[in-house]
Length: 113
Ligand code: AMP
Image (cartoon, rainbow, N blue to C red; front, side, top):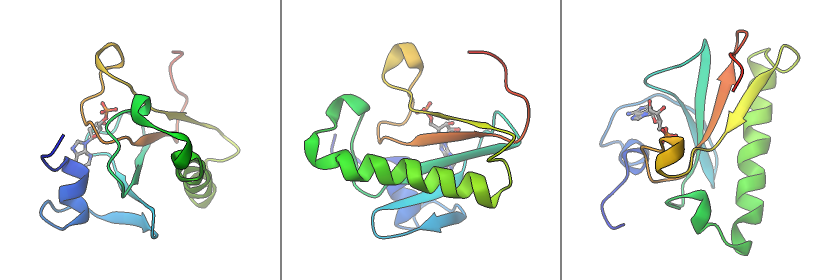
């Protein structure tokens, strides 16, 4: 996939979005269409289309995404009440942006999946 993903456009400033966390490898934004009071996307700066495209060299990157989500959950005070972390992959999961991103969802009682 050569065209820029919406997340790359956000990172380059071509699309406006408040970046709530950033380091050398990942960044985080509030989801534009939140499904709960807290709905954050943790996104690697490296564009990887789907979880299927991960390889062994991405292990630390994916681990870091989870650690950043954990830290944001703590900072938002939802670590003890609970939250959901999820990656949608391809059509059946309704993945819409083909640049992997970890959804951090919480801040309220969530429906069963
Ligand atoms: P997925 O369905 O897992 O691919 O999730 C893509 C997510 O990106 C959806 O929850 C969208 O609401 C979100 N999204 C799309 N465009 C933007 C944007 N410009 N800013 C923030 N979130 C976005």
